[in-house]
Length: 306
Image (cartoon, rainbow, N blue to C red):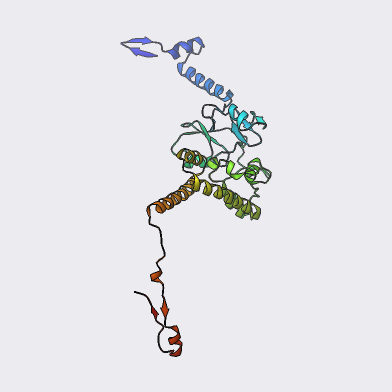
C-alpha cells in the first residue's frame, strides 16, 4: 500500500492479496515466498555445462566406459562405440584435467564442470555452484564399507593411520581404457588434458608400493621423451611446431623448446664459425726421456718446435 499526497494507492501485492482472499498484505507476502520455495524444491537440477572439447555444445550424457561427461558431438566422434547414460549425469564424473578427482562444481564464469583442484588453480576468483550428487545425506556419519573418492593428501594420511583402505584409481589400473591407450601408443594420446597424470601416478605408486606402476610410468615417459626429442630435432616448420605443442603439457612444451633451441644454436654455430683444423706445431717433437732415465734427479723436458 502506497501513500502519496494524502491519497492511498494499492500496490500489486494488495491487489493479489485481495484476489487470493488474504486480508493481510504481510501474510500474502509470506504465502508467496513459501510457494516460491516449494516450487524451487520441485524443480530438479538440470546440468548445463559446456563441453570442454566442443564449447558450443552442452554436456548431455555420461560415457560409462571413460566416466566422463560428453556432448552429442563427443558421443559420435571421440567416444564412438561406448555406452552412455543420462540418468547419473551429475554423479561421479571425473575431471579431464585431473583424472584423480570428480567434477563437484560448476564454474559460473566459464560454464564448465570443475573439480576441487580446478577451483584452486585454473578457476581462481571465479564463482561456483555445487552440483547434486548421491553422496549428500542428512546423516553426518559415514557407514562402514562406504566407498568415497578422496583427494590424495587426505587419503594418504587416513591410510597411513589405518583408518581407511584405499584402492588404485581407475586411470592407473591395467584394465582401464586410458591405460590401454597409453600402452598402445603413448605419443598418440594428447596429455594436455592430463598434465598431472605422471606426477600423481608417482605418488600413488609410492603409496601402494606398486613397482609395476612405476615401470609403466617410466616406460611411458621414455617413449614420449623420445618422440619429443625427435620432433624437436628435425622439425623446422613453425606451423607444425605449433600444432605439436598444442597437444603437450607445460613440462613437455618446455622440454621441446629447450631441445629445439639447442639444435638451432648448434646449426647456427656450424654455419657462422670457422672450421677447426689441426695444428701440428702444438705437439712435442722431441723429448729428453732417455737422458732422464740415466740421471733420475733431472726433470723430464719436452722440447717444442719454434
